[in-house]
Image (cartoon, rainbow over all chains, first blue to last red; front, side, top):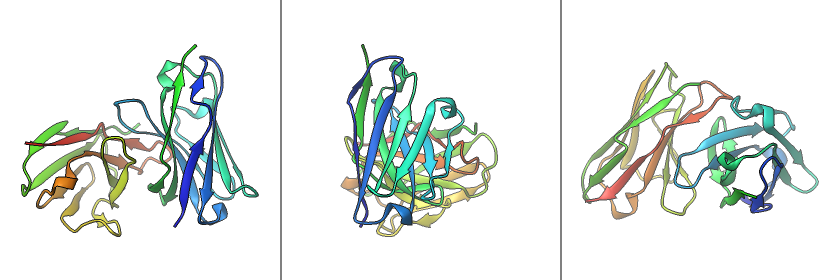
Length: 116
Length: 108
């Protein structure tokens, strides 16, 4: 069974770039498609982007100008970069395996706080 | 972006009750809707996809229905482990995927 684990800094300064990695275990990253989803504390869910195993991507238009994702098949990892962050980007960030357009397996999530 | 409005925003119910949560889309989304359950401090879990298909391993007391703009999630007989927040998600307007604001189901 595929498992996912997010990693990265828990604190990012405003205007800087948030960088996270999702490590996939129990299966090949090349066998599935992947996504990033976030959840501000006490609030609802927001879809960030979709990463095909080929490396092709699609992003939520509301974040597209600031988001970059990539896949490293040699490490069985994929990554998220979100630039020019503000306090509004403070959230728990989840990586997920997707089937079609739905998230069928989630990482545990990592809280990223944007603060100086 | 397509907006999803869930009602009610919160709900109190008792074990054994039949519960229905509604999700309304701001425009038609065919059957491109999923439902997730999230318990406090936990990761969301997929319950229903394509509006009415039960995800493998999910108890049959959960069911989904609807198409177009109006959708429902029904729990036929509430169990103690069902008290959680439920979210709908539309993927018709991919990549502009959106979620509803959530419905918090509490114990009466």
